[in-house]
Length: 232
Length: 288
Image 1 (tube, each protein chain N blue to C red):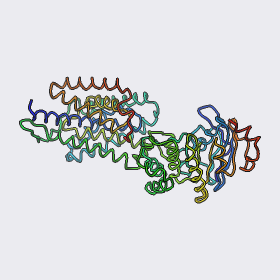
Image 2 (image 1 turned 180 degrees about the vertical axis):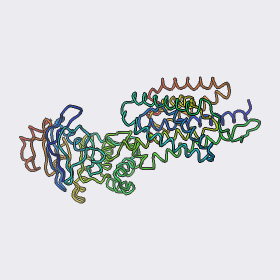
Image 3 (image 1 turned 90 degrees about the vertical axis):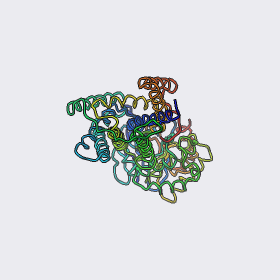
Image 4 (image 1 turned 30 degrees about the vertical axis):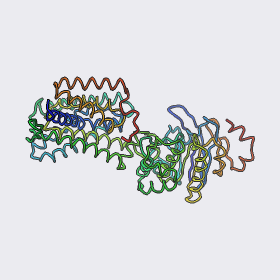
C-alpha cells in the first residue's frame, strides 16, 4: 500500500539516510525503531517531501508521489511531526479545520469527528493550541493529521514529553482507528513498550539505514538485538 | 477650554487615528501573515488613489470607484507577488530592497503620467457640530470605516478557510505544507489582500488626501512605525499601537500644533520600542 524505495535524503548537501526501503501493507501498523540520531525523523520527513531528495521514490496506493509537499498530504499521507508543532495562535478547532480545508474536506464535519474521537479536547476546543499541555497538543497534532483523511498516518515520536495516561489513550486511539477504519500507520518511536503494544512489525535503523526487519514476536524474543540496536 | 472643545478634539483625534489605521492595515496584514515588509505600500495607496480619481473623472460614482480601485490594486498586488515577492521568500532584506525599487518605479511612473500635482475631488460639505465647534462629517465617517475594516478582517481571518490556512502557514510553513496547505497560494492571496487594502485606503481617503505621486510617502512612514510598534499580531497589535500613538498624537496636534503632534508620535514610538523591542504584541496570546 505504502512504499519507500531506495530513499537517499538529507539536508542541503548532507546525506542522512541512504538507500532505505520499507513497506507498509494495507491496514498494518509498522514501527520504525532505532536510537537517537540514526535518521528516523529524516526518513519520515523524506516520505513527506520535507527533505532534499537525492534519490529514491515514495509510492502510495501504487502511484509514485510528486515532490510537492502539499500534494503528498492531499494524496493521503497524514503527518504528525516530532515535537507536535501545533499552530500555537490557532485554536484547537482552527488547527483541525486548517487541515480539513487544505485537503478539500468539510471542516465542520472534520471538527465534529475529531472532537468526538478525542473527548479530552472538547473543553479546550476554543483555547489557543499554544496554551495546551504537551499531551493535549499531541492529540491536536494527531487530530489535525486525521482531519486530512489520510490513507497512511505517519507519526514521529508521539510519546515524547507526553504523560503516561495520555500515552495509553494515544495507543488505544491508534489501535481503534487501525481496527475499525483500517488506517495504516507508520510510527517512529524510542519508547519500545508503546511500539510493541500497537505494531505488528518493525524496521530497525542504524546509521542512516535500515539494518533489520522483524516481526513483533521476533523482537520480543531477541534480547540481544534489542540491547545492541536500541539501547540508548 | 470648554467641554465642547475637548469633545471635538477627541473626535477629530479619533478620526486622525482612523485614517492612519485605514492606511496601515494592508501593511500590517502582509507583515503579520507573510513576514514581508512591503516598502511599496505607500505607492500602492497612491495607486488606489489614482485609480479612484480616474474612475470618478470618467463619471463612475465615488462608492463604485472605491470598489474598482480596491480590486485593481489587489490584482496589481497579486501580479507583484507572483513576479517579485515569491522569488525572494525568506530573504527579508532582499524583499525590502525589491519593494523599495518598486516604490521608486511607481512614484516616477505617476509623476510621468499625471504630473506632480493633481486636483482633488473635494470633500463632501457636511459638518458634525458640537457647540460652536465643527468637524467634517466625512472625517467622522472614516472612524466607522476603520472599525468596519478591522471587524471585516477579523471575520475573514478567523471564519474563512483562507484566513485559517494563512495563519497556519505563517505560524509554521513546513508543518502547514505537510498537512496540505499550499503556502505559496496563501501568500499570493495575502499579498493581494494587503495591496487591496492599500488601494482601498488611497481611494476612501481621496477626499482627505488628494492623489499626488508622493502621497504614499506621507502616509507610509507612520504606517511603518505603527507596524513595528505593533509587533507580530496584525490586528490587536496594530489597533492598540495606532489607538495610543495616533490618538495621543492627534490630541497633541489639535492642542498645540501638527509638528508637536508628530514629535509626540515619534517620541512615543522610540520609547515603546525601547521597552518592547519586538513590538507590543510579541507576548500576547491572541489569535490576531
